Image (cartoon, rainbow, N blue to C red; front, side):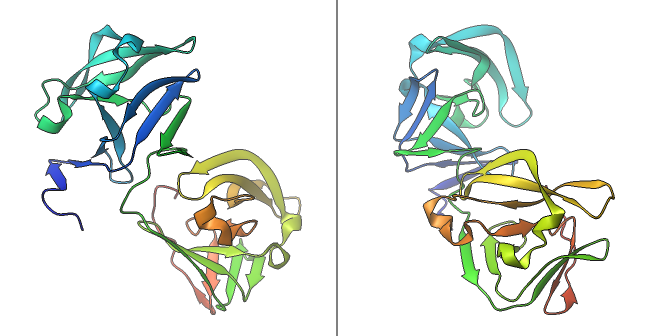
Length: 256
């Protein structure tokens, strides 16, 4: 765990100085470049980056008239970011009089308003990586069965178990052990900053209704997650999963 000097909590917001170089771009143009970003946990799931004001290109941001209010961070001035021929209104905030001292000289740039974010020289998707999230992917011989409305969707004695901080164990199964005839490719594509780009699947039982986005796979995961390449996983929250003959309780998560 980080030392008191490394981490600071104020109410529901935690602030910590990051160690990675951080860059962000809009329209192909560099907007900010820093080696001392702040990681701010506005929500418990993952942090948000705040960038020292001196490391944001001042000529690319223009103050707007309105203020944004946060109960914990105070009032923020809003800025439009203009770069590379694109404009992102209210994409930057500065809490110059925040009760949290560390935030006063930093600018919060909306992650989704930018085209690309880089930690060191690696592009990061979806949201910043949490330095306290860990992934372990382990081969297993446990017997895993996946059922939907009593119908067996998958049955495997050689799953890969993915343990990710803050989430239930995910069971990734080889395609030959999955009823792929019941799966239909979904239009839903998601990104994970730790695993990469995922393609989702719907499930249809016989001629029944379509059950949307119950499974997914990573065709080409990031290097640290190569062990799950091409394997199929199912939402524990939405289907019945048996492990060694025991029905697992359905966890309650943000995916429920």
